[in-house]
Picture: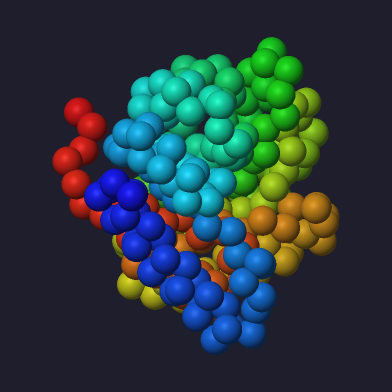
Length: 239
């Protein structure tokens, strides 16, 4: 194996061991948790290596990086997740390659995504991004809708042509009552997920946890964890 492939394989094995151990500790089956490797700022060559190593879910947060990378890897069987704050002027591009948009946080974005998905003849999975640091009617510092806005957005996604409501996503907040309390934050997200599934039973995806706190996310019940640095390491970034 090349040095890079060896490095990624070792890192991936360590992350896999962490997820497996967290599942055992939580009394969960390993297959209940999907690993999404966040490949932002890393080249398409890394995505290809990850695919060779068995990774099938990858995530990006900037369209200008993601679009050419997705095109370069179009021959691979991958599920592309868009996880960054998304401006409406980027929606048409994102809808051409993303399978799941995890950062839906306003009705204007729902409308734009729906129009783009219909135009592309595709169905986009959508997660409502919940900001646990946001007051009613506000958006979070890292994007996301305040908790009291979840149901309105969920209904909008469910009613929108070309979109499928998948569930909820959050990023552990850096401020507010949940700052530094990742497990409590993820437990709260699970409460919101349970409540939402009362009206939208198929929306059972919960995306939470990253390299530093994936164990807390698995313990809380997350179905998907988004891991970047722990897999890809620290290396020279794209420009």
